[in-house]
Amino acid sequence: MGVELKLSPFTFEGVPEERPLVMAGPCSAETEEQVMETARQISHYGIKIFRAGIWKPRTRPSAFEGVGKEGLPWLKRVKEELGMYTATEVANVKHVYDALKAGIDIIWLGARTTANPFAVQEIADSLKGVDIPVLIKNPINPDVELWIGAIERINRAGITKLAAIHRGFSIYSKTLYRNSPQWEIPIELKRQIPDLPIITDPSHICGSRDLLFEISQRAMDLDFDGLIIETHCNPDKALSDAQQQITPDELNRLLKRLI
Ligand code: PEP
Ligand code: MN
Image (tube, rainbow, N blue to C red; front, side):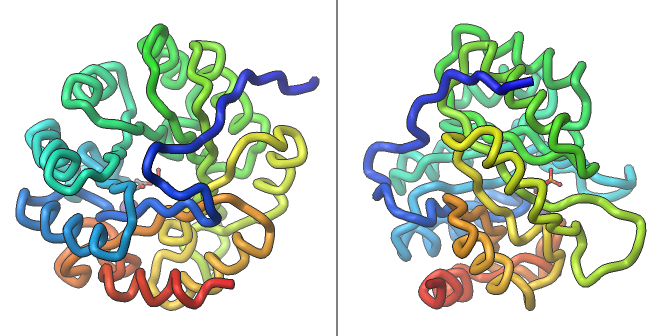
């Protein structure tokens, strides 16, 4: 079955149209100070798109589940004071409503959401008539059809500014990575939908800091379009995904080394 999408360019006013398109920011928004400090440092290096999770899908219920909509005004400050675009994850219709109301510029569907067609369809229905760029992470399971299905559902709701995020796949056997990259899957996605940008998320693939550069370089070698990298002003103290987050300085060094 062919994939027919109606896409528009995944570009942003004031953001250079060069590879990689970089999105950076903490796994989670934790406090107003942490958000502002991280954003200031990232913006100092010329990065224009700020990511931060407000609602966090955690494996176990006792983990930090995000600050919730209380954090949305912090992202608004990032946008107003630093002129950055802001991006956050939405997993249900309530999240979409709150994010849009707060003026979030870009939303993404997380890996657990993409794996659930009912959830994706509800979000898609809530986006009808809304003009917002949407990123769709790969489903946690290595299934390119499920990934394409989520992209189609969002596109059929009228969202044309779309990109895919490659964040690796859950497999039972222990590997070097937190989520196995399974490069053949995003490559197959690109084969089926050549015009859809692919943004690699080395942070969630690696689960630790040491392999971030190699994964980022590999994404560039494969001609993928962008990188989304978890960046925190004090990574060791992060309330979620501490082991994989890097400082804005380290992010800058990583990006400068990329060929
Ligand atoms: C995240 O980006 O912090 C996140 C929760 O991602 P994923 O859906 O890829 O696990
Ligand atoms: Mn994370």
